[in-house]
Image (tube, rainbow, N blue to C red; front, side):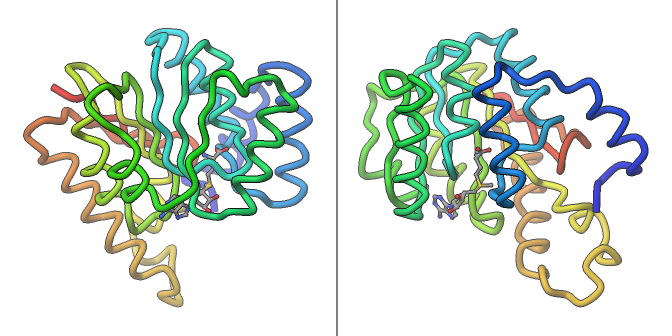
Length: 214
Ligand code: SAM
């Protein structure tokens, strides 16, 4: 289910403008094949943010086919993106090469936390961090990424409302997503109470948490 009224969601989506025809084709193909990439409203929000922040360095956890990584790179950012699934990594690298972003994006294969700890050092600082991988592991990813933030770095966590189920169990009647829901609630408490973060939660797309490193 959408986290806002379906009529409102559909109405807002009419205002979505793709970055160019290549992004449009990749999105259409992903949507057709049910590959989970950022929702249209999330993309619109991120491109607005990218225009404002003009980040030089972006860290992403959860590459999938490379769509959002290329959104960041299309705004001039250098991107390090981490993906656990090896087949996804191959597809992402293929898409990134085809769309001409190979000089801007480095794809790391592995778990988000482990890859950060094994591959990044004090020379890697990020203006923007995008967390969009396993929903019950956000805190692990965040804790691993925080040492690579500086004052005013922005962390965007996607899908934090889990199709409204984070807000109420009534949206998960069979309890199938119980663990993800419990962990996401804990995560939202964690980032809201974190002494180094200033956080807001937005009902955009599937829910976004925006945190500023103080
Ligand atoms: N950000 C991508 C986009 O919008 O184009 C979509 C990412 S998709 C929602 C989530 C991805 O995270 C999947 O491809 C999944 O294989 C990957 N993933 C799941 N668990 C992970 C982990 N522990 N570390 C890194 N990636 C993981």
